[in-house]
Structures are given as C-alpha cells and as structure tokens.
Length: 379
Image (cartoon, rainbow, N blue to C red):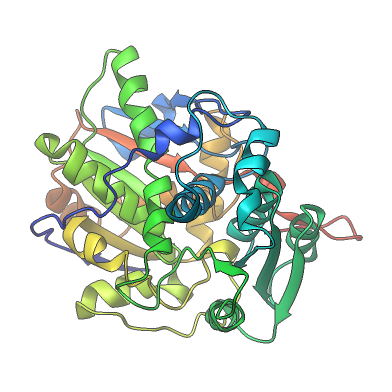
C-alpha cells in the first residue's frame, strides 16, 4: 500500500457548460440511482455517517459508464446535426435524429464497462461499434460487448495498447472515437465523457437534501484513467466548493497511474501488466484531460492491494450494496487510509473526525464480472 497526501490548488476551469443530467433524464429508462445510508460503515471508519451512491445499474447496464458514453456521443453528433428535439426521447427518435450521420461507427478501447456502454449507445443511435480490448479482459466481459452488437478486437497487450489501437483505427472517415482517456490535453471527447459522469453527483445533491443532510466532508472514489475521479473533484470544488469536500482516490497498487502522476505533477506511465482483482482499473496512463482536475482537487491518493478491495466488497454487502472489487475500490481506499498504518496522518490531512460525513460510490455490479464455463467467477 502507498499513500500520497496532496494539497489541492486553485480549481481548474471546467470545460463543459452544458448539464448532461438534463439529457440523461430524457433518455428511455432513466432512473435516479439510490443513495444508501450505511451506519455500519460509519462505525467501522470512525466517522459520523457514510452514504453509498449505488451506481451498479444504469439503463440496464451493470455500471455507470453509459452516462459518459451517451453524453459524449450526443454532444459530438450535435455539432454536426444540431440539438435533438425537446421532451422525452424514444429509441426511434434517437435513431431518426442520428440517421444523417450514418454510416458511422463508434470506436472505443475498454477493459470492460466503457466498451459495453459505447456499444449500447451505438445501438440507441443506430450506429456501428468497434471495441478494442486488451488480452486480459475476461471472456464474460467480451461476450457482453459482442451481445450489444459490437465488433470486438482483442489486442495483444495491456489497456494502453488497446487505447493506441483504437486511436489508430478511428483515424479515418466514418469513425468516431468515444474514448474515456485522452492522449492530448486538447482531446474533447474524453472531456465530454467525464462531463457525463457528473450526473450521479448532481443526483446526490437532491438526495442529500431529501434526507435532511447537506455537507459531504470526503468522497471515496475509484480511479482507472481518472475520468470519474475528475468528475468527483468538479463536484467537490466547483459545485459545492463552500463545503471543502475532500476527494480520496483509490487504485490498484500495480496500476497506480494517478498516484504516479500526482507525485510527479505530470503524466507518468506505469506498467499495469500484473493482474488485479480490480480488473477494470488496470490502467497504466492517466487521461491527460483528467489530470489538471485531479491535481487541483484530489486530497489523498491510495494505491491498494487486492485484499483491501475484497474486504470492501464484503463491507458493501453488509449495508445492502452488492458490488465487485473494482466497484468497491472507493471504499477500499477509505478503509486503507483510515484503518491502515497511516491512519492518523491521513485523518489529520483530510480533517476527518467523529462527526464527519463521507460519500462512497459503488461503480459496478457483480454482474459485470464474467462467469467462465467452469462456473468460477472472475472480475
């Protein structure tokens, strides 16, 4: 386990002035995901209260990723087609609106959930999908992507190799790269994907109010390439900046690209070649468009061994939220930080005490894991 304590700086200007949640609310099947009070977690972590945002299902998919993929695709097409009509949307309306862009194929790299989400969005809009995956992605995740109607391309190498392959494939007419990671600070699609990830946090605002609560003192969030964590910092520093909400980011010990980047103050690639139970977080390079927000808004970054995430899965289950090791990584980071060997300096740095209120995001369902023919589940 490694911990980096970061001093947040002046918040970076946020690119997207739109409100993706307004678009998401119009989509067929939209529903606000639940916010679960978890007194057992509060007692375990030594704080006043913990709430869990349950992002284990969105639009029938077992993760939050479709929020980013749908908004980025719509916002990109809107530049050419103009805005879609007002009011609630149906699949037929989405396809009719996008039809002038056809034939068009959405291209993405993934280690699981993002690629499946892009494939689902392509179906909504009547578009094609080609998804690139590294060779460690489980058969179950691969099948789930293909069942959405996408063409699947397995790349010999790690996640970064799949990102490179997708980028090369999309560099031709009739293809749109819907990437959740940026190789250049000027890449706009990954910024749009991250903008889509603000929806859960805006829902939390309303849910907290209904519960008679207001402030969140710290957020425990996972990091792969940093998109969701970046969205968390946007919410913490620009939407509820008066509350001094701290952001705690967790990632696998053997794929700690965010910790490396925060330590260096610039992108630092790590190998990310060793397997981890937190499979969808096995990323070697931080997204360049996410990094400025991470530097500005992350207070603590924790690189954790699998044991912490497996313990977090059990603790999530005890409060009625079923998730997997990747989905429980945000809680795992809080467990490691507040219960591990560096607990006292971490608590002091974050300013947490017995009355503090924490938010944890559960980011994928156990259904996102594969089941091989032998019956064993694999993340």
